[in-house]
Length: 435
Image (cartoon, rainbow, N blue to C red; front, side, top):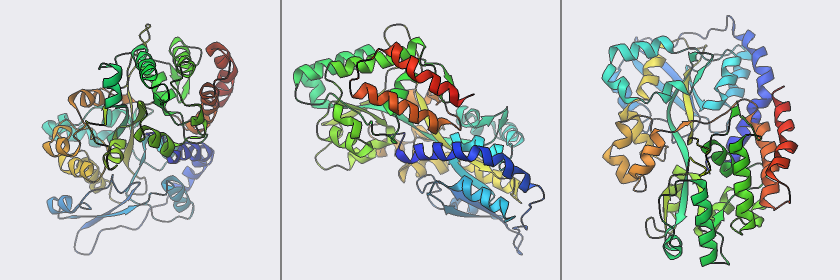
């Protein structure tokens, strides 16, 4: 699912590092690495990348052919400790890479530590000098990594939760698409349960530490107000979603054993025949790899609702990783050329084909190679992705998740408590994180 154990761990690590990060920022003063300019006049740009699939598919070979004066050297650091490594390097007075690429929600911690530079002038220059290429880049690429009014990264691609469904079971139960509201989704689950009483209509994960994908996606989908990463559980939207899942439990649509299910168990239940699951868009790649579980015949995906059906409207969130230039870069101009390249079709389409996430570029996302690689990427899902918004986040998001997991556990196990009582119980704990 889009919010995995690894991502939750990153949120929690960022929460712990937030306090120490600001202190380390002072250590960067005067910490300038030696020039990377080679003797032959070429400039070397170093990059720490957080995932293999988000790196350049050809290790920037095409870019270097177009820019013969720039050498790009990348290192994939998928241990989710790029921030920690930068802080240690700064503390020791060691050279920093020119570029880092990490989860966008951690960018605030990089900024608090003084580790990244503003990109506003570069972005303005890009728009002025190449307006046609700039127009292809979705505005969210610059908006999501903006902190305190400054663009600090390039969020060039993102994942988004969608609703996967069991095609034969939907047909058998007479469930029609689209599912436009959460009330429609509830009715679908009830219909599935009536058709196959001994099966699971809605697969979920609820083990502590794996996040609350379905709960948060629903809250955002019905317009729950957030203060950073903290939802307002007293709001009508949050109250609706809590009630929605409680009704799902009472109708027998949620498996109570999911309190011990992580991502693998929830997906396994869907593959084994569950009716629906909320999962990341790119999880479809995993489903495609399962023998005898065929796209179109056995499963398909559609958009999550963004209306409750009772008056609360919201949006679909997407989550990204951002490329940024460090304050230790000896070659920020050359580093920017690399970052600008990561927004291009030439970079983004091969990124998709090596297992990446949907690009935030109008040309790249409609490329024929992408359509062939992702046969499930329908026009409906594509339009939903293009209109997606940044998910609410903050450095205390891991601590928020811990509390929401407790609330989620009470829902999944059918504790006899009203939505209002749950809000009264957990909102003070959430508010205390922001005090």
